[in-house]
Amino acid sequence: MLKVNAINVSYGKVEIIKQVSFEVNQGEVVVIIGANGAGKTTIMKTVTGLLKPTQGEIMFEGQTISRTPAEKIVKLGLAMCPEGRQVFPQHTVYENLVLGGYLIRKDKQMFLKNIEQMYSLFPILKERSKQFAGTLSGGEQQMLAIARAMMSNPKLLLLDEPSAGLAPIYVKGIFDMIRKLSEQGTTILLVEQMANMALKIANRAYVLETGRIALGGTAEEIMNDPKVVESYLGAK
Ligand code: ATP
Image 1 (cartoon, rainbow, N blue to C red):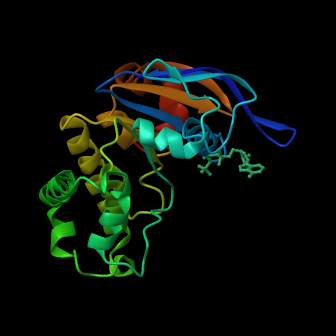
Image 2: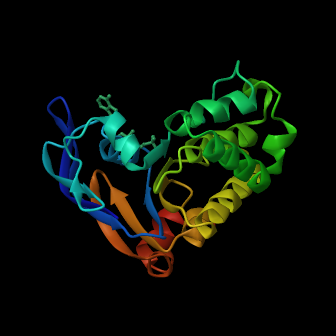
Protein backbone atom coordinates (compact mmCIF):
# COMPACT_ATOMS: atom_id res chain seq x y z
CA MET A 1 0.00 0.00 0.00
CA LEU A 2 2.75 2.46 1.04
CA LYS A 3 6.29 2.05 -0.22
CA VAL A 4 9.03 4.40 0.84
CA ASN A 5 12.15 3.90 -1.17
CA ALA A 6 15.54 5.31 -0.09
CA ILE A 7 14.37 8.80 0.84
CA ASN A 8 16.56 11.59 2.12
CA VAL A 9 14.97 14.57 3.86
CA SER A 10 16.70 17.80 4.91
CA TYR A 11 15.90 20.93 6.85
CA GLY A 12 17.93 23.48 4.92
CA LYS A 13 21.37 21.95 4.54
CA VAL A 14 21.00 19.54 7.41
CA GLU A 15 20.13 16.07 6.25
CA ILE A 16 17.91 14.44 8.87
CA ILE A 17 16.58 11.36 7.07
CA LYS A 18 19.10 9.24 5.22
CA GLN A 19 18.27 6.49 2.74
CA VAL A 20 15.16 5.42 4.62
CA SER A 21 13.10 2.62 3.08
CA PHE A 22 10.09 0.84 4.53
CA GLU A 23 6.70 -0.40 3.50
CA VAL A 24 3.21 -0.88 4.87
CA ASN A 25 0.96 -3.55 3.39
CA GLN A 26 -2.81 -3.51 3.42
CA GLY A 27 -4.26 -4.53 6.79
CA GLU A 28 -0.99 -4.22 8.69
CA VAL A 29 -0.05 -2.25 11.76
CA VAL A 30 3.55 -1.13 11.27
CA VAL A 31 5.52 0.75 13.90
CA ILE A 32 8.69 2.77 13.55
CA ILE A 33 10.37 3.02 16.91
CA GLY A 34 13.08 5.50 17.70
CA ALA A 35 14.44 7.75 20.42
CA ASN A 36 13.79 11.44 20.80
CA GLY A 37 15.01 13.33 17.73
CA ALA A 38 15.63 10.21 15.63
CA GLY A 39 13.51 11.69 12.83
CA LYS A 40 10.14 9.99 13.32
CA THR A 41 8.02 13.11 12.90
CA THR A 42 10.09 14.15 9.89
CA ILE A 43 9.25 10.84 8.20
CA MET A 44 5.53 11.28 8.93
CA LYS A 45 5.55 14.81 7.55
CA THR A 46 7.29 13.62 4.41
CA VAL A 47 4.84 10.78 3.79
CA THR A 48 1.92 13.21 4.15
CA GLY A 49 3.51 15.73 1.79
CA LEU A 50 4.30 18.49 4.30
CA LEU A 51 8.00 18.00 3.57
CA LYS A 52 9.49 16.84 0.27
CA PRO A 53 12.30 14.29 0.02
CA THR A 54 15.49 15.48 -1.67
CA GLN A 55 16.07 11.96 -2.93
CA GLY A 56 14.13 8.72 -3.23
CA GLU A 57 10.51 7.97 -3.87
CA ILE A 58 7.24 7.46 -1.99
CA MET A 59 4.52 5.33 -3.58
CA PHE A 60 0.95 5.02 -2.34
CA GLU A 61 -1.18 2.33 -3.98
CA GLY A 62 1.20 2.21 -6.93
CA GLN A 63 1.22 5.97 -7.49
CA THR A 64 4.19 8.26 -6.85
CA ILE A 65 3.33 10.86 -4.22
CA SER A 66 6.81 12.25 -3.51
CA ARG A 67 5.91 15.56 -5.20
CA THR A 68 2.16 15.55 -4.58
CA PRO A 69 0.79 18.45 -2.48
CA ALA A 70 -0.36 17.51 1.02
CA GLU A 71 -4.05 18.30 0.37
CA LYS A 72 -4.11 15.91 -2.57
CA ILE A 73 -2.43 13.18 -0.54
CA VAL A 74 -5.22 13.43 2.08
CA LYS A 75 -7.75 12.94 -0.69
CA LEU A 76 -5.96 9.78 -1.84
CA GLY A 77 -6.85 8.29 1.55
CA LEU A 78 -3.93 9.02 3.80
CA ALA A 79 -4.81 10.69 7.10
CA MET A 80 -2.42 11.79 9.80
CA CYS A 81 -3.03 12.31 13.47
CA PRO A 82 -0.22 14.64 14.54
CA GLU A 83 1.73 14.52 17.76
CA GLY A 84 0.30 16.45 20.70
CA ARG A 85 -3.43 15.73 20.22
CA GLN A 86 -4.22 18.93 18.37
CA VAL A 87 -7.99 19.04 18.88
CA PHE A 88 -9.89 22.32 18.63
CA PRO A 89 -10.38 23.06 22.35
CA GLN A 90 -13.16 25.65 21.94
CA HIS A 91 -15.25 23.34 19.80
CA THR A 92 -17.36 20.48 21.06
CA VAL A 93 -16.40 16.86 20.58
CA TYR A 94 -19.10 16.57 17.90
CA GLU A 95 -17.83 19.68 16.09
CA ASN A 96 -14.29 18.29 16.09
CA LEU A 97 -15.60 15.13 14.41
CA VAL A 98 -17.54 17.23 11.88
CA LEU A 99 -14.33 19.08 11.00
CA GLY A 100 -12.54 15.75 10.54
CA GLY A 101 -15.21 14.70 8.07
CA TYR A 102 -14.89 17.67 5.71
CA LEU A 103 -13.82 15.43 2.82
CA ILE A 104 -17.08 13.48 3.02
CA ARG A 105 -19.30 16.38 4.10
CA LYS A 106 -21.42 16.19 0.95
CA ASP A 107 -22.33 12.56 1.58
CA LYS A 108 -24.69 13.02 4.51
CA GLN A 109 -25.36 9.32 4.93
CA MET A 110 -21.72 8.37 5.06
CA PHE A 111 -21.06 11.24 7.41
CA LEU A 112 -23.74 10.06 9.86
CA LYS A 113 -22.56 6.47 9.54
CA ASN A 114 -18.99 7.48 10.37
CA ILE A 115 -20.08 9.52 13.40
CA GLU A 116 -22.14 6.58 14.67
CA GLN A 117 -19.22 4.21 14.08
CA MET A 118 -16.85 6.42 16.07
CA TYR A 119 -19.41 6.75 18.88
CA SER A 120 -19.96 3.02 19.06
CA LEU A 121 -16.23 2.25 18.98
CA PHE A 122 -15.47 4.94 21.55
CA PRO A 123 -18.57 5.47 23.73
CA ILE A 124 -16.86 8.10 25.86
CA LEU A 125 -16.89 10.42 22.83
CA LYS A 126 -20.64 9.99 22.58
CA GLU A 127 -21.08 10.72 26.27
CA ARG A 128 -18.99 13.86 25.89
CA SER A 129 -20.25 14.89 22.45
CA LYS A 130 -21.54 18.29 23.61
CA GLN A 131 -18.56 19.12 25.79
CA PHE A 132 -15.78 21.44 24.63
CA ALA A 133 -12.82 19.32 23.55
CA GLY A 134 -10.57 21.42 25.78
CA THR A 135 -12.36 20.06 28.86
CA LEU A 136 -11.52 16.42 28.08
CA SER A 137 -8.65 14.59 29.75
CA GLY A 138 -5.42 14.16 27.81
CA GLY A 139 -6.28 10.56 26.95
CA GLU A 140 -9.77 11.50 25.77
CA GLN A 141 -8.37 14.30 23.62
CA GLN A 142 -5.97 11.85 21.98
CA MET A 143 -8.88 9.49 21.38
CA LEU A 144 -10.84 12.35 19.80
CA ALA A 145 -7.86 13.34 17.63
CA ILE A 146 -7.65 9.79 16.29
CA ALA A 147 -11.42 9.51 15.78
CA ARG A 148 -11.34 12.84 13.94
CA ALA A 149 -8.67 11.53 11.56
CA MET A 150 -10.83 8.43 11.00
CA MET A 151 -13.82 10.53 9.91
CA SER A 152 -12.44 10.91 6.38
CA ASN A 153 -12.40 7.10 5.83
CA PRO A 154 -8.62 6.88 5.41
CA LYS A 155 -7.13 3.83 3.76
CA LEU A 156 -3.98 4.42 5.76
CA LEU A 157 -3.93 6.10 9.17
CA LEU A 158 -0.66 7.65 10.32
CA LEU A 159 -0.24 8.17 14.05
CA ASP A 160 2.60 10.33 15.33
CA GLU A 161 3.44 9.29 18.89
CA PRO A 162 -0.12 8.73 20.12
CA SER A 163 1.14 8.01 23.64
CA ALA A 164 3.19 11.21 23.97
CA GLY A 165 2.57 13.08 27.20
CA LEU A 166 -0.15 10.74 28.44
CA ALA A 167 -0.37 9.22 31.89
CA PRO A 168 0.27 5.44 31.77
CA ILE A 169 -3.38 4.63 32.48
CA TYR A 170 -4.44 6.45 29.30
CA VAL A 171 -1.69 4.95 27.18
CA LYS A 172 -3.23 1.50 27.43
CA GLY A 173 -6.61 2.89 26.36
CA ILE A 174 -5.08 4.52 23.30
CA PHE A 175 -3.31 1.34 22.23
CA ASP A 176 -6.56 -0.61 22.74
CA MET A 177 -8.22 1.92 20.45
CA ILE A 178 -5.55 1.51 17.78
CA ARG A 179 -5.95 -2.25 18.00
CA LYS A 180 -9.73 -1.91 17.53
CA LEU A 181 -9.28 0.28 14.45
CA SER A 182 -6.91 -2.26 13.01
CA GLU A 183 -9.35 -5.10 13.68
CA GLN A 184 -11.98 -3.08 11.81
CA GLY A 185 -9.75 -3.08 8.75
CA THR A 186 -7.76 0.17 8.94
CA THR A 187 -4.13 -0.05 7.87
CA ILE A 188 -1.95 1.81 10.37
CA LEU A 189 1.55 3.26 10.44
CA LEU A 190 2.63 4.61 13.79
CA VAL A 191 5.81 6.07 15.18
CA GLU A 192 6.51 5.68 18.87
CA GLN A 193 9.03 5.92 21.63
CA MET A 194 6.86 3.59 23.73
CA ALA A 195 8.29 0.55 22.00
CA ASN A 196 6.82 -1.96 24.42
CA MET A 197 3.15 -1.21 23.86
CA ALA A 198 3.53 -0.45 20.18
CA LEU A 199 5.28 -3.76 19.44
CA LYS A 200 2.46 -5.65 21.14
CA ILE A 201 -0.11 -4.40 18.64
CA ALA A 202 2.12 -4.26 15.54
CA ASN A 203 2.66 -6.85 12.81
CA ARG A 204 6.01 -5.46 11.74
CA ALA A 205 8.46 -2.90 13.04
CA TYR A 206 11.44 -0.80 12.06
CA VAL A 207 14.01 0.81 14.32
CA LEU A 208 15.08 4.34 13.38
CA GLU A 209 18.43 5.56 14.67
CA THR A 210 19.61 9.09 13.87
CA GLY A 211 17.75 9.21 10.60
CA ARG A 212 18.55 5.71 9.36
CA ILE A 213 16.66 2.45 9.56
CA ALA A 214 18.89 0.27 11.71
CA LEU A 215 16.65 -2.79 11.83
CA GLY A 216 13.43 -4.16 10.40
CA GLY A 217 11.43 -7.32 10.96
CA THR A 218 8.28 -8.82 12.41
CA ALA A 219 7.20 -7.25 15.69
CA GLU A 220 8.22 -10.48 17.43
CA GLU A 221 11.71 -10.46 15.92
CA ILE A 222 12.22 -6.83 16.88
CA MET A 223 10.84 -7.41 20.38
CA ASN A 224 13.34 -10.20 20.95
CA ASP A 225 16.34 -8.51 19.39
CA PRO A 226 18.93 -8.11 22.17
CA LYS A 227 19.91 -4.63 20.99
CA VAL A 228 16.30 -3.47 20.98
CA VAL A 229 15.69 -4.97 24.41
CA GLU A 230 18.72 -3.12 25.74
CA SER A 231 18.03 0.25 24.09
CA TYR A 232 14.24 0.51 23.87
CA LEU A 233 12.63 -2.08 26.12
CA GLY A 234 14.70 -1.64 29.25
CA ALA A 235 11.68 -0.98 31.44
CA LYS A 236 9.83 -4.08 30.30
P1 ATP B 1 10.50 13.42 18.95
O1 ATP B 1 10.36 12.11 19.58
O2 ATP B 1 11.20 14.41 19.83
O3 ATP B 1 9.25 13.98 18.33
P2 ATP B 1 11.42 12.68 16.31
O4 ATP B 1 12.06 11.34 16.20
O5 ATP B 1 10.03 12.83 15.86
O6 ATP B 1 11.58 13.21 17.79
P3 ATP B 1 12.00 14.83 14.51
O7 ATP B 1 11.03 15.78 15.10
O8 ATP B 1 11.70 14.24 13.20
O9 ATP B 1 12.36 13.68 15.53
O10 ATP B 1 13.40 15.59 14.45
C1 ATP B 1 14.57 14.99 13.91
C2 ATP B 1 15.70 15.99 13.93
O11 ATP B 1 15.37 17.08 13.07
C3 ATP B 1 15.99 16.60 15.28
O12 ATP B 1 17.39 16.68 15.42
C4 ATP B 1 15.37 17.97 15.21
O13 ATP B 1 16.07 18.87 16.00
C5 ATP B 1 15.49 18.32 13.74
N1 ATP B 1 14.40 19.20 13.28
C6 ATP B 1 13.08 18.97 13.43
N2 ATP B 1 12.35 19.96 12.88
C7 ATP B 1 13.25 20.84 12.38
C8 ATP B 1 13.13 22.10 11.69
N3 ATP B 1 11.93 22.61 11.39
N4 ATP B 1 14.27 22.71 11.33
C9 ATP B 1 15.47 22.18 11.61
N5 ATP B 1 15.66 21.01 12.25
C10 ATP B 1 14.57 20.36 12.65
